Image (cartoon, rainbow, N blue to C red):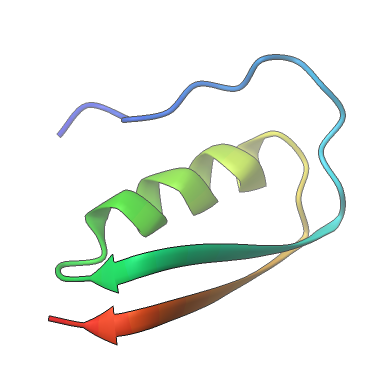
Length: 52
């Protein structure tokens, strides 16, 4: 699957929390986290409200 996100060139914090309302397959969060890691993030935590 092609990456769903692109980095806009802005500085990325070293530690981030991604929040999503629904976790089904995790594809969206994995792609977002990979894009942020490739842009310089060192630690990414993920929080979701519902797992489907």
